[in-house]
Each structure stands twice: as C-alpha cells, then as structure tokens.
Length: 332
Ligand SMILES: NC(=O)c1ccc[n+]([C@@H]2O[C@H](COP(=O)([O-])OP(=O)(O)OC[C@H]3O[C@@H](n4cnc5c(N)ncnc54)[C@H](O)[C@@H]3O)[C@@H](O)[C@H]2O)c1
Image (cartoon, rainbow, N blue to C red; front, side, top):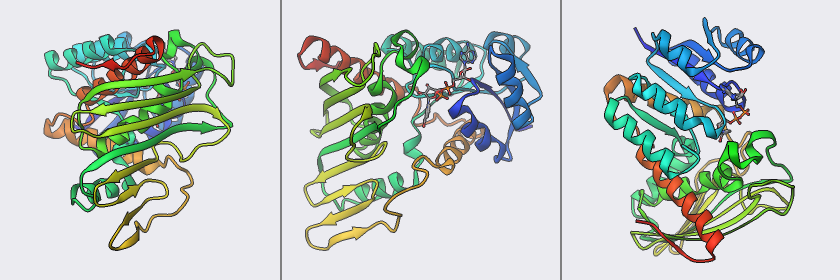
C-alpha cells in the first residue's frame, strides 16, 4: 500500500520534502494542510495531491494517512505533532522541534505512548560531506575530539515574517540557524549529552524581538567543548550553515570546505567541491525522507528522533537562560 503522506505548511521547506516524497516508490502524497486555500491549492496542484484541508484536525478526523510532515511555523510544531501522534500517525517535524523543552518533552511522550514514530528534521545528518567527516571521526583518524567550532549564520540576509516574532518562532537566529550548527557538532561528536551552556545573544541589525546575533559554548559529557555562532544579517561568516571544525588530539577536520589536516600526512582533501551551490541541496532532503520511510516500513526509531530534537531544544533553552542571567546554565 505504501506510506500515505500528508504535509502541513506549504512554504519554503515543504516543497523540498514533497519533492523528496515524490521520488520514493513507497511514498504516496495524499493530503495537504494550510489555512490559506490558495497556497494549499497551488501546492496540491504542483505535487498532484488529491486531498486538501484547513487544519490538521480535519485531516486526522478523516484519517487514511500514515505520516505527516510538519513544515509550519515553530509555534504549531507541538500541537500538530501531538495531535498526529495521538491519532497513531507517524511524524517528521521540522527543526527546531518545538518552542521550548516543555513542548518538546510532550511530543516525545506522545510518541512513546502512541508508538507512532517521531523524527526531527535535523537534515545535516543526511548530508554526504557531513557523513564523510563523521566516518573519518569514527575511524579514529582525528583522535579524541577536544573542541568544535560551528556556524549557523546568514550574511547580509535574514528571514522575515513569523521567524522574527518570538510568539511564533520561540527564538531567533539561534533557534533557526544556530541549531543546525549545534546538531551537526553533536552528531560529529557521537551524540554526547550537554552538561552546561554559556551564551550571549543580542539584536543589533533589525528591530526584531528575537536574537539576530549569538555565541554559545556547550560543555559535553564526553569532555568536549563546542562553540556555536548564530546570526542573521551578519556582515561576515567564517563558514556557511552547519560548517563545523573539529579539533582532535591527532588532527583537524572540517566541513565546507571539507577536509582533514593530519600532522603526519598534511592536508587530506575529501574530494568535494570547495564551494557548494546550492549549499542546502535537494539530495540531503531526499536521503532524509527516504530514511524516515525506511524507519516506518521497518519499525525503527528514527535518529534524529524526538530524543535528539529534545536535547537540541534543551541546549537552546539553556543558552537563552544563560544569556538572560549572565551565568552558566547547568543542564540535568
Ligand atoms: N531543515 C531546513 O533546512 C529548514 C529550512 C527552512 C525552514 N525550516 C523549518 O521549517 C519550518 C517552516 O519554515 P519555512 O521556511 O518553510 O517557512 P514558510 O514561512 O516558508 O512556510 C510556513 C508555511 O506554514 C503555513 N502555515 C502558517 N500557519 C499555518 C496553519 N495554521 N496551518 C497550516 N499551515 C500554516 C504558511 O502558510 C506557510 O505555507 C520552520 O520550523 C523552519 O525552522 C527548516
């Protein structure tokens, strides 16, 4: 029968996921949700989707769906995801998983209770270059990784609309962009747990009520330290989205451009292009959604799932708290 997919939200990222689904033989695009009839009609026409709804509730009431891809503004992630999970519908929700840790924990609990799967769209875990660097780390060539430095920064650009209002987005550039660098660092480090976070945020470039500039230091339980920069409208970035540098006892490795530098062998190129265009390729989202379908078909808990998404939201929450208090936030 295949996996019958619904999509809620029909904006920028939803199109990547619909294109990915259209390529998967086991996936069927059956429903789309958006409160704006023109937007959902256009999306339905583009992807040949037969059923259209105003709300996720209407879709779930009618049923006949196996999985929902949640691509709405952040404030809708938790309610839409929990409603779907409670109806035994598997969910892939975009990052950030939720507005805060309370919501994220509720989503994870709903998944455990219903046994419907919950995946979080931390897409960089599916990128070819990230996976290449991870394989180098896992092979031990860099030795133990002591520290990482990563970037989630837009140069001379930033999003508008709901992204810039805390009541819809939860946070600013850290919740939007910094979280990509945070999750990439955590993935490359082997998913350690955070112990403490120290951060500074500010809003300097536009009159938003969320951060457009941030610096976060995370202390992990494997002894490593990660430094993450987040930003919108910055005059410069030391690397593109999710670019991460790894400093190991035996060598250095980095993403974008992706290479290793080992004391005994010099610079070792990955074979990937120095500059990617586009930086966020469709192929990354294709692999991500194919993995979700595979998890559904084979009853595997997705990774990154609710557990990984929750850790990231915990770090983001802790970072905002640290910036507010001026103190290091301990995470338990
Ligand atoms: N993983 C990535 O690379 C990546 C990239 C961009 C965005 N995102 C994430 O995806 C999510 C969406 O971002 P976007 O850039 O696509 O935003 P967007 O503004 O382009 O799209 C949001 C969509 O949600 C719709 N919407 C708003 N309220 C709704 C409601 N009540 N019911 C149904 N639909 C509703 C809007 O009409 C729009 O179609 C965000 O959480 C964002 O952080 C992830």
